[in-house]
Length: 182
Image (cartoon, rainbow, N blue to C red; front, side, top):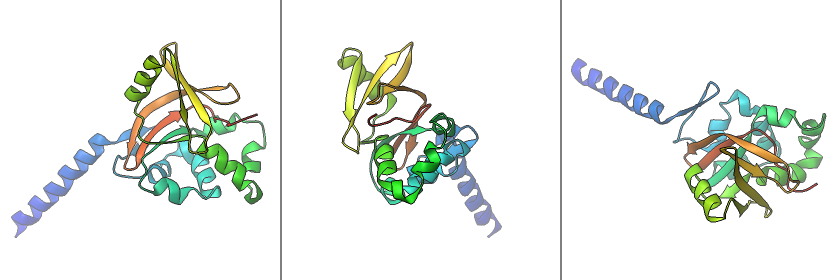
């Protein structure tokens, strides 16, 4: 009986080691490919503003659904770089529609891994555009060896961490908040 219990514990430990090997560390938070976008983002201190915004916009259920989604996830520093008071204003209930539109501008239907994105850029002769869930488009290009995402205002975000696999898609961590229009 003790031998079976030891085998069971070893199997559990082996599964944990396999799961941890597939995880990606995002500044101290482990992101697991068997968890959803929201579940993983909720464990990251660097994505806490994004998670608060997703909750305030009522998008938790959507981003926990089957997907797949590609999310360009702005860090807390990206949100902090917005003009003073912007985040606080957007998080107010009366601004839910605006916040939802901005967040959906960071989401693309489907799984777009970095390799796929680079191929699209190459096939597009240096850039590619794709539709976001809010209906507007983003442009991707490579500048100085880095993947850049340009929004409707002409501002660009750098993909800092790519290909963070989720159970319902993939996350690419970016250094700026993308805006659908001026």
